[in-house]
Amino acid sequence: MKRLAFPNRFSHSHPPVQDVNEILEKQETSGERAADWLASAVGSWRFIIIQSVVILIWMILNITAWVRHWDPYPFILMNLVLSMQAALTAPVIMMSQNRQSNRDRLEAQNDFQINLTAEEEIRLILEHLEAQDKALVEIYQLLTNLSQNDNGL
Image (cartoon, rainbow, N blue to C red; front, side, top):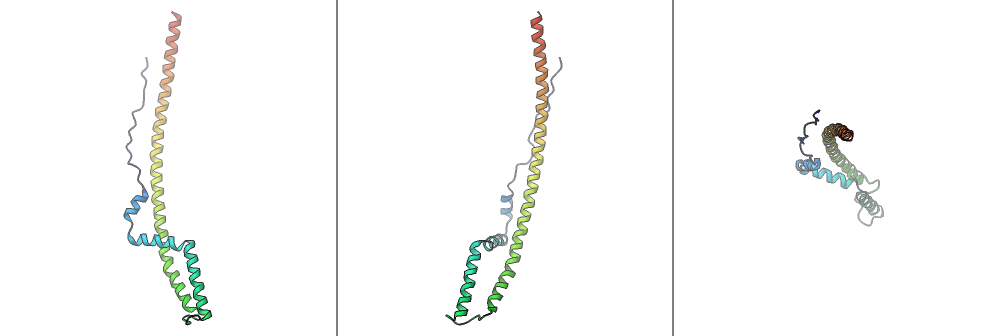
C-alpha cells in the first residue's frame, strides 16, 4: 500500500501587521502637527468664509469712513497682508503634503508586505489542499477496492 504524503505543517513566521498611522504619530514633531493643523484649517470652507467676511468688513470700513481710513482704496495694506498670508501658508501646506506623501509611501510598502505574506500563505494552503485532494482520491480508491473485494467474496 502506498503511503500518503502531506506537505509540512505551515508555521506563521511573519512579523505582525503594523499600523502605519500609530508609527507616524509617535514620530511626529510639534511643527509637523502644526503644519497639518494649519493645512486642514486653511483648506476649509469655514476659513474661506471667515476670511471673506473680514476682507469685506475691511473694505466697507475703509470706503465708508465709519472709522479712520487706515487703508484707503486701492487697499494696499490689505494686499500686503494677504500676500504675506499666502507666502507663509503655501510652504506650510507643502510641508503637510510632503508628510502625507511620505505616509502614503509607507502605507503602500506596508500593503505590499502584507500582500506578499498573504500570497505565500495562500500558496501553502493550496498545496495542502491539493495534497488532501490526492489523499482523498487514494482513500476513495482503496475503499472502492475493498468494497469490491468484499462483494466478490
